[in-house]
Image 1: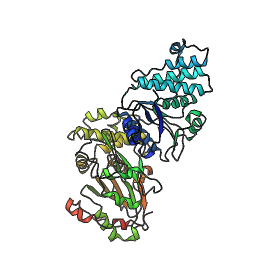
Image 2: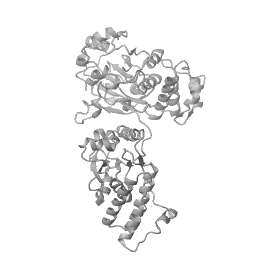
Image 3: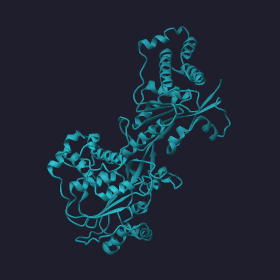
Image 4: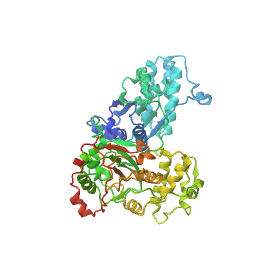
Length: 526
């Protein structure tokens, strides 16, 4: 058997799709000149460095691993040095004749056994012989390490003679022995990718003579290796116009993606990092057409707007209010800021403390308690509200002096949402039109703690949240971190303005309004 293992190039913009392509598809896409027993096209790539935005990079890592795990592809994930065999495990190698180079190599090769894939076993045996004959290290010790690691990993992930090419993903900065093994695994017909946010990891691969053909994919920033993410985080996603120098494949989401009505009951929101003009451009777009929309198993990532616009373009209030009215869609809750809501009583906040431990909320107990006012809602919707309640508590976007008070405010805010908001959530199909919450603030009093928490929570629940402040006064900044939302400032502030009370239009009326000049109004944002 003389199967050729050939390294092919991965596309960073479609990395997951490339890795999940099976053996037959890879051969066909490369002209179909070889059969499966003649060639195995594999990926051998080092993705080093990270994105400037830590959350974006974290979500990239989580999504990559999560997408692969959901498939039938044999997959090994490694995020720490691979152990060496212990004394008992080394006994299996004790019978190898070490008197001559040939006998050492043949003895080690005979120890390779990928139990359900005899073809790949033969490929691995040849690769081992080739590498050991060229290696300058202790041949026996190097061979024992390679054979042990290959058998351990290949049999652990049930490699078999299927049409799937097994994948090893190494996260972090591998030690030299593991780099040597990754090079060996690639030669055995495995896809191998090493991912590290620390660019210094490149040095280790450059020192290994067997890594000369590795594909190097460099990201712009560099930072120390941190634990691999265990969940998606709420992140800002840069749109194409905001980051014109980058080609974001997420901008290619089109209208040909079809979803069943209310196909998904779970969602995560990601705040879009936009230019001012893009707020208008994106405002009417359904979720599935926005940059950053993604499906992750049984849940979707909904790209949302969370922004504050200070000032009035050229001070033209007449045009300003006309265009604000155009922004009020049939899915909009429109609020005129008034003196702060009634603050929750101290005993009410205290009643939540028994459900709090550190920054964790015992949501299961809270849902079953008399304090849960949402028992009339569907169970999935209740679970979503409580899930985002916990996310608000964990992510640190609230800036309250007392952490315990902060979590109690979150619980109180989440359990006292306006009925119009609850109805919007009930109607919300996460792939379609995004509900809006528009607040016009023309008074001097900042938002209360409760108002700030509820606005933040609405963002977590997938609403587009827009705060319009003609005066540019401080409001949401009082208790919400600047990292949670975008701020845009126009060229003139207006004070003591009278705010019109706009009504939410029906669908037919809104279609006539939506061609307004809101984009022109905000053209001078900076």
